[in-house]
Length: 73
Image 1 (cartoon, helix red, strand yellow):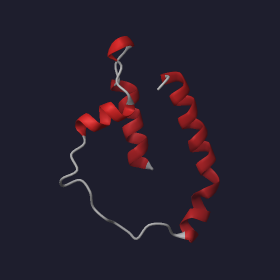
Image 2 (tube, rainbow, N blue to C red):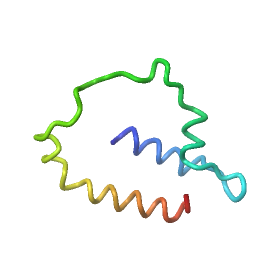
Image 3 (cartoon, rainbow, N blue to C red):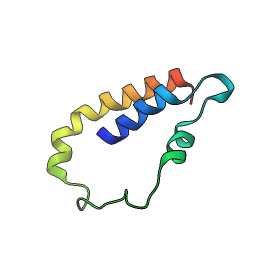
């Protein structure tokens, strides 16, 4: 979540204006190099942790929707 938020912040600052505006996928795709960046750190979904943080996910979803509605992207 933190890394995704950082990527969204980067895009918000550097996406450009007007006709030169990049989509989120274009900006990140131009910078992303899979080699050396992908690393498995866990087995995935853990019910206990999801329940602990699950209540705040709605707030993050709302924030993302607001940002994207302003960005029109």
